[in-house]
Amino acid sequence: MKRALVATTMVMSLLLHAPAFAQSPAVEDVEKFIKQAEAALAAESIRVNRVQWVNSTYLTEDTDALAAEAAARQTELQVRLAIEAAKFDAVPGLSDAIKRKLTILTGGIVLPAPTTAGAADELSTISTKLQSDYGKGEGTLKGKPINGSDIEEQMSVNRDPEQLKEMWTSWHDNVGAPMRAGYRRLVEIANEGAKELGYPDVGAMWRSQYDMPAEDVAKLTDKIWGDVKPLYDDLHCYVRGKLNEKYGDTVQGKTGPIRADLLGNMWAQEWSGIYDIVAPVGAGDIGFDTTELLKAAGYDEKKMVETGEGFFTSLGFEKLPDSFWKRSMFLKPNDRDVVCHASAWDIDNQDDLRIKMCIKVNAQDFVTIHHELGHNFYQRAYKAQEYLHVNGANDGFHEAIGDTIALSITPEYLVQIGLLPKDKVPSADKDIGLLLRQAMDKIAFMPFGLLVDKWRWGVFDGSVKPEGYNAAWNELRLKYQGIKPPVERSEASFDPGAKYHIPATTPYLRYFLANVLQFQFYKAACEQSGWTGPLHRCSFYGNKDVGKKFNAMLEMGASKPWPDALEAFTGQREISGEAIIAYFAPLQAWLKEQNKGGSCGW
Image (cartoon, rainbow, N blue to C red):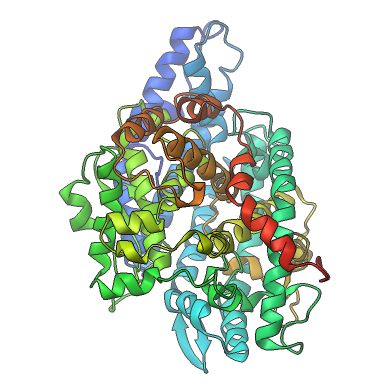
């Protein structure tokens, strides 16, 4: 999701020269400043969003330069506005809405630059190059180049351990390693910018945006992880055993960490690609494969997106505008480099909504489409908010909306949309298979979702030194995920850079929180719809009462603290792992039985 903040030259001039007050500023002075800031930010966002869209869909040196220039101007303005906003913190009598907008202005910059001459340009140039290099990146398979989109697909279907090792190693070496020096400099500049704004480092600045003290954010995530870790440990133990059966001791041992390239995903963050290896006899054969259903029904990329849109419209949401279908990128072009990483875009903060994907007709992309459309429908729901509230309640909310819908891609839903014949719906004895396949994505993701920003927080606060970047990354991967690289790694490498969100400087805690929030949202939606069966089979497709209440939360945007938004839909005010544990409770009991007598842990 992209939402650039930059201003016109005329309004920049107005804002960059702070007004001199003969006496302490009054409430009306702050309100005037906020109004001018929002007008400036809104006025230029369309131009900058278009520049960034063109850059992402036409990767060239020229579009890189244009994007870098636009981002530099954006950062300069954001920093100056943040410095000015900080002067108003102590003004008495400010409304909660104004206070919230000041907080967003002072701490809501993902990559701050200091006011030193040239710093914003340097930071933007580095950032743009890192993202561009990622988009152009390639690995190899059987010695031949393979692009990022194709390598992701191959990692989920290839079962040759040597070829998996080749793809994993070549991608990390070719894409990640060259970024190391640039990333180190990016951290140095951004930290200087954060300190100018009153934060100890960029990580603390990111954590300031969750309606709680920054130090409490880490405590919250650790608590959630503590709730989910026992289930992850059970899953890890079971999957390792099945991989050992498949490949033998020389490839995957019976004990210790799992080899990262064997898990069906370049980053070992989701494991459903190897469900065929771990599926339990009988229960594991759920009777259908969504990929095969899509192909048999003649789905193409557009039909997949139309189906995703159909879920939202079944809840009462309006259809996406015609411009969405004309301007989105659904397929990887043959004639140019693009950033294939899926994203949702709100170009004008109103109705120019788009997604950018290199769609393949498979189950994974079908889920991803529902996820990305969740961003678009959220964006449109809050478009009536004032500019600084044109965002999600927190970034985890934004990621969770589409995933809540995607959780409803159950056999019942596939019947409702005509993909699965009713007599092919798995019987109750297949529930463990259904849950296991879901856990291979949702539970497998949890430690990865946490460790990405734990690594970055350490990088930003200096506890992870540049000379130990790679070691710290792989130590966290071992500690939290229980995985290891397929080959020895050294500090000549920069394995974090092989994950898009590192060169793109996209905070990752949002995905960890979203993975929990989506189950809270989903459970609430199922209860509101009157669903009485097993939670993991619930579909609220077509329930307009759920849609109405869902939309009421979405329309709030960032105008209220996230506990208020959470309560509006779920009745709860805390992000909790309770719903995700309840969802997977039958699976956890089964996993413990399967693991009896084994040696779990790593």
